[in-house]
Amino acid sequence: MTIDYDLSSIQEARDVARSAKAAQGILAGYSQEQIDKIVTAMFEAARDNAEWLAKMAVDETKFGIFEDKVKKNLFASQNVYDYIKDMKTVGVLKEDPERKVIEFGSPMGVVMGIIPSTNPTSTTIFKSLIALKAGNGIVFSPHPNASRCINAAAQVMHEAAIRAGAPEGIIGCISKVTQAATNSLMHDENIAVILATGGPGMVKAAYSSGKPAMGVGAGNAPVFIERTANIKKAVYSIVTGKTFDNGVICASENSVLVDEPIKEQVVAEFEAQGAYFLNKTEVEKVSRVVMTPKGGMNAAMVGKSPHVIADKAGIQIPDGTRLLIAPLDGFGPGYPLSYEKLTTVLAFYVVKDWEEGCYLAIDLLSLMGAGHTFCIHSEDETVIREFFRKPVSRILVNTPGSLGGIGLTTGLVPSLTLGCGTLAGSSTSDNVSPMNLINIKRMAYNLKSAETKISFICKHDELNIDNITAVVQEIVAKLK
Image 1 (cartoon, rainbow, N blue to C red):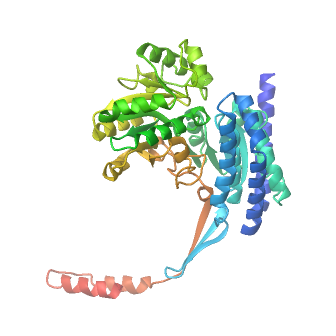
Image 2: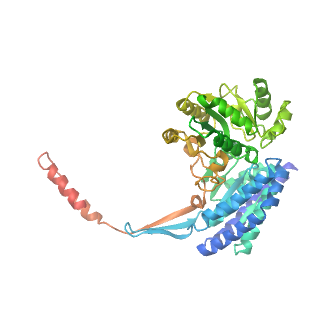
Image 3: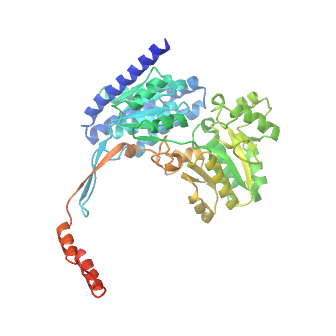
């Protein structure tokens, strides 16, 4: 029975890829105006269906917070649309009359979108919009724990696209979710590029498929509160970022590094804003519940509230607690909570100054999260600029990590796929957008005569100390 189901799922994967390829061949002939009409209709459908898709995601995955998932669906539709709606992606993109170069945009083909369970409907909306804005088709491989809501979101986007004139099959989604189907889709001849959002294993598989791929890396973002920071605002930002959808966005804060002179004020402010500081015994209990012994996340605790975690760990916390904070003396093996935690738990460190904070941040990122995100709260621009050296792709200043990283509270590109660059084995460090999903052709006209330069230079076969200066001056003048 299992073998038959795997074969059936593989056949489905092949069918949706083939249909998307045929549809994309038609879409490739559409004008920018036609593409934009389709994208507008998709955005409107995603916006109008944001609430029930969010409820479906929470009900199926048991992750996160309904209201925050609604906000993410609206971000993935409204904010992304506002950013991309006037973007040129097909046909002539720009002309440089001085250099006589014309750039043309053309689609890549069919995108394979790998979708996680943490942000299922919002990521499906986002990837649908940017794929079709670039003139591509897209087929989705859902996380098995979020298959129903991902298929529902894909259906909403597909139906809206069809109504606006897109060819049938331009958006597809596997309904029979198996590893065999996902692997088949990764290697399918009709897939041009893989856009992978998910766990490290899935992203690594995408890069190993032989297809061009763009993926994300682990988060584990450190956040440093420097002594000049506005403490109340800094703590508010951190609590907001970490508790948004119960911490499932990969750019959310995972470790707080506090400048020693302001430690007591910071602790008091965290407590005033609903954080509970664990004692050593409680840290050990929470560590065993939230993490595995090797530093991996316990999937059952991802996106859970502090009270669910506390109940599972067998500890008592005050009513209204929004966040659990674990003071740690070290990191790495032996300190499980120093690794990425996509839930409402933060590690907590005290450093003597910004330089020690800088080195500790590097250590934590080297442990996990290199290439992703670092946050700093400070009013000292000189100190802030020192953190440009961090091995990350996003340095967020005085803003919530999760919301700043995706571009909701910052000027970064609105995106739910955050590249981590070569530091994490990723092909891009961008917040991925439609521009990452097009090929750019360049038409270049002749500007200079190669023959004149070559023949002139070749006349001087023999140079010596007496004539070299004169010859060089003559060559420079001729080249001008």
